Length: 425
Image 1 (spheres, rainbow, N blue to C red):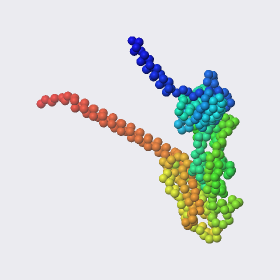
Image 2 (image 1 turned 180 degrees about the horizontal axis):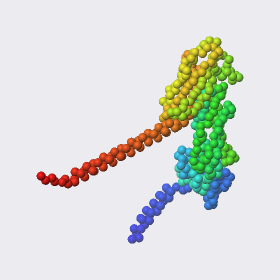
Image 3 (image 1 turned 90 degrees about the vertical axis):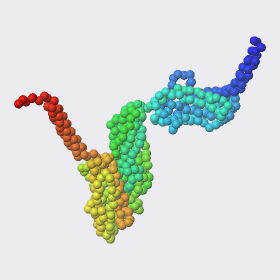
Image 4 (image 1 turned 90 degrees about the horizontal axis):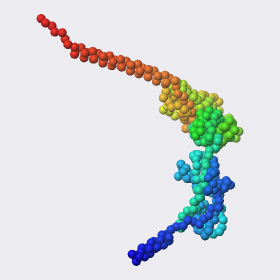
């Protein structure tokens, strides 16, 4: 029996040598300390470090190696973020080499977005090389908190868009999100173009935590003599009883009136054609009232000129030009075009835009964007109410008729089944 044990022992010893030769040891790296914003972390300390979302986290790592190493990488990251595949919460160094007995300090930066969940996380510090060794990983408990008061501008919607013509109206709607711990009340939102000295404001009564709210449309009229160029639309939000303020800027392109572009003073030229708009933003009730846009055309020339006002059709409204779409204006005289927009009863509510163009022969003098704020009509609701009332009456009549028919049929059936008296002669 003993003679048979030696081959088995030899085989096990050989297998052990094979496994030992193929085993991979960990990188011989010692992590001296890890700091976040100058606060030193510990893997053994159960206390968590609290950091707020929507901020930049500076991570500093000091480490060393007992042997020379090549092609080492250092990465710091948080796992469990919903959008890590799009916006990873991580940072890593370039590949570097290490000499034995030398202290190294690496600094990394991780940005926490404002939609990170308030929860417990672990900051993971990981050292890897190209092939030879298993990673070295250190874990540090982190608590991600939210600020007590925090509003963010989620979006700004501009009508007719981020390009507007001089003399036209610009409507702005602002959507805000509450990313703080407290509900916000009486939030004041102001949009302005400081370079043109125009602004508009609106109030939001309340924005609850983790909710979004949207302002009403705020009206800005671009001056008639505004120069062509790129301007900044500034959104300013005051909240927390006016103690906190946030601002955000968006680009707006203005297309200037050529008549004013050539005049350094910004005033209307003495010769040529002057076009005056009463308003480019009006309100109308669907199916009931109309929006009226007066346009005055002045011919400062010596000779008569023929002007035509072309207006695009709209599938949501009846549009007409009075007294006529083409007029002859003598030199030194002025005439009035009037565009009337009558929204149909089923027209969509809110800001609706139509385009108009004033031409002289084949020359385009001005392109207009006219905005109608369509409000729901009471007539449509009353008509619907009457229709429903009539339908209800008809339904009741039909039910009565059906009941009578069923009653008569039942009575007739009973008469047929009753025995008839016999007559004897």
